[in-house]
Image (cartoon, rainbow, N blue to C red; front, side, top):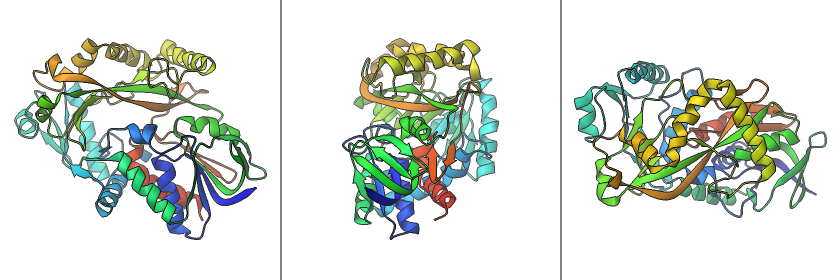
Amino acid sequence: MEKFDFVIAGAGIIGLTVARELKRKSPASKVVILEKEPSLGIHASGRNSGVLHTGIYYPSDTLKAKFCKKGADTLFQFAQENSIPVRKDGKVVVARSAENAKGLEKLMANAQASGISAELMDEHQIKEIEPFAFAKFGGIYCKETAVINSKEVLKVLERELLQSGVEFKFNTTVLAADASNSTVKTSQGVLAYGHFINAAGSFSDNVAKLFGVGAEYKLIPFKGLYYKLKEKHAQKVRGSIYPVPDPALPFLGIHFTRVISGDVYVGPTAIPALGRENYGLIEGLSIGESLSILGNLAKLYIENVQNFRNLVHKELPHLFDSGFIRSAASLVDGLDPTWIEKTPKVGIRPQLINVSKNKLEMDFLVEQGDRSTHVLNSISPAFTSSFAVAEHLVKEINI
């Protein structure tokens, strides 16, 4: 039986940055990362739009606010030091109605409380930055918002970790845990650990339950579909154009982002999915899991938890071109359907729900077990925040 000081489940951005921080704090420690896929970046960490968020959406008393700005600064510096493509294009957050504009004050309050660079602007000022943005009701400019090549970040981290002696076990799934004896059974054999870190992304709730942790939580997947501006229209968006989020809904809404390649992606949706890796129509579906997810979704819908029913009604039209384009057109003046084309880009947001309380958990959530740490809700802005989250988790482990 192999023995390690630290066993990490999941080679996404959280797992990789935690391993890096562990080796920084304890260079002699023996660390292994278990990854069920044959390589990095197949799921959430490799499918995001690569935006380094400022944190303006999050109240100062949340973990998201605590880690987002610091994480963005650290990741930007890491990219520059390692020649990873990164660029500060900025972002405008625009109000789509007079009622929606009331949210600008709240966003500015968040920015002030967290020390985020943000400027309240009128229509004329917004148009100077993003000439095609719908800005009749004003907005906010966040000049520090950046975009990065997220897959390149993963590759550089993998290379650095291998050089520091971290071991990777790909095609390896955690099957069972014996917390009393500090061992885990995997598809490749049994491992002993000093401390176990669960960074298994959309399967983190299942892994936690093997350790007797997080029985009240379950992850529900939401599918993010993306379109993009055709190449001849891509110049119409210079950076990112986001809506002021609807306070009654749990997600940010469709937005425009000029990614590091220069393409301008439009999305993502937040359509309830019936599988944790349900990227296609039937891909990633199993009858048992789909029925379980459907049951949880039905309960959220019937009880209209956190306006979930409204979210469903708003998102289902995005399955059709006309509904998607209608939402996109609320952000860009004169948007013509011929400007946009479908893309194969799809992401899954694993959203944690508290089953016992029947509510969506909107902040990062970490649970501790006996010699184990479980990252249960690593939703956006987890990629942006990853270096800061890793530093916090390793401090909590107290090595």
